[in-house]
Image 1 (cartoon, one colour):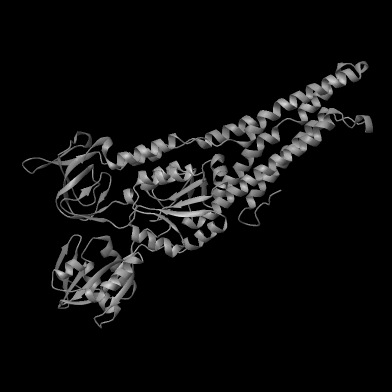
Image 2 (cartoon, rainbow, N blue to C red; image 1 turned 90 degrees about the vertical axis):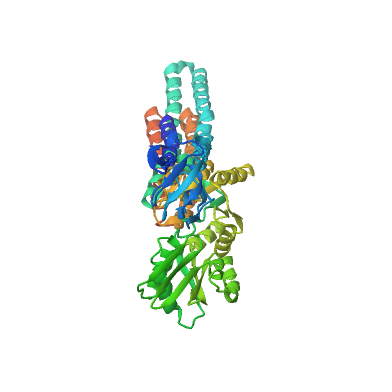
Length: 548
């Protein structure tokens, strides 16, 4: 039973290599290299060298790191930064291998290849973190190391005492006592104490949509006192939505949104799509646009029903002779709350502001309050901008924020917290979280996130998102309590049973425990351990199993 328990634990601890394979798969196999005469030729990514020109079309992944020399586009870099909004790229800006080109064609000059790329550094960080994970000591293993030799010693002493005390009875009675002690003290219950509770606990977790990769994970999760949370897709919804509309034109919000949405509908930029969806949700009717113009990273313009509509940054409107001074304070206030504001001008006059944001998930604030009530400290670690991260953290009640952090630096933050003696859980959903998930005592992935994050994690929350996090940690604590209860009762049983099996009551009662009855008692102890473990099946339905 002890060996079976160890086998189950060892198999559960094996780390998957899917995370690393998934990261490598993000890089396309071929690249479109531009020759000196301007023609594009497909070549293997491995053949690219520093200085080559590469063309990337919309919807394609960028094959390696480089610097844009021609074109404008929006690039999804969430795998590196966790930032939910795509980054506008134009000449002179850097692009990174594995990121997704969304809206325009880009030609870039290769600056890094192979192991020097940003994605390769993430792969290396995941491999190092997974390889350095030390297994948590199993309590049953430690106990068994002392328990077994002690029992053998007691059985031997019993054999000698009985033989010396009553030589006339012969060796048979002494051997019978010896066997009774060994049979009753067989560490079946001890061997089942951990794997039985782990099996039931992980099974109940699966029913609740919580996938736990083994008993070592449950034990570590039960001791968590620091939770590090990613922002995008973990405590936020992971997609931009229209949050604020300020109308100074006198037309009303819906009418202003109808004009703005009509123009923005011509853009493929995710910010534009968020504005369009928000306008429709608020009842705006979109029409037709003419003379559409888009400038990457600045804004869009078009004519709707004879009105020239211009939406974009303060600098872009200023270039058309429109001053935004009257609404600059409002824009700054929106930005301080984590919004991304865009100014609106109608026929050359400032008309208002529309703002979008990646909103906190509805349940996030409650979850964080519940974690604090459990005595767990909470901090946010994100690649997003500092102002946006702090705004979201303030809204959710998170005091500590690590912002503008690269994937490898997230793993460093985890290591620093571990060095302080904290038992750390990292919660994330993106590729950029994989190194930190692998490096924490317990990595917890939101099941709606990337397969790579789930593979690198120890626990996957498959249903309910972050709302399942307190339940997962409570289940771990309850499972460890059950393991301790199992060990407690197994020891009480042996402390009481071994003296009886050895014949300690014989001088007073004349009663001896036969090996047959000892085996029945031993089986009863195993059944009691299994029955106590099965109480975990009621977790989440009734009161949690109480501590002995």
